[in-house]
Image (cartoon, rainbow, N blue to C red):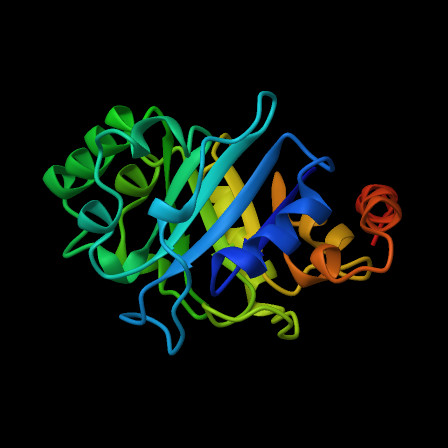
Length: 221
């Protein structure tokens, strides 16, 4: 189970505070971006992010309607988010093969995997398994997008369980509301990773909290 610290920051100052608390915890850090088109809030933009230090890879979770325009596949962005770029299902005009191919080609130019983020209550019947399997990562939201500190919604567990049964080899991460009490449940339904925000960024001791979550992830439920 990979634990991925997640940062949602309104500005550079807030980002710097959160970054300093989690950068040494794990090799992958997720940064959440929103421009107000799909959520009620706005964050800083990819232009505010510098190239990460050696040994740290970034994920960009793009909660925006036009991700290809928001994060152009060109310098200086092409070497910043080398782990994954994750787009919202609502950002895709359709789930046809040409559309998926277009997004995957964008990810190649960014040197990143392309992930699809599924909101609470997403209807898996709206997308064919062979199309969904073309994504290198599927993210299941356990909270409404755009805000940290919200309670874990157990519907995410059932969605993850269904995805794992249909696509046994795909990477699945659960995002939102994950803590010491819920991380083992995520592992039990087949999640390979979890994105963890305020539980780490606001912890009195982020290193100790990260260690406790690693232990909790191995517990039977």
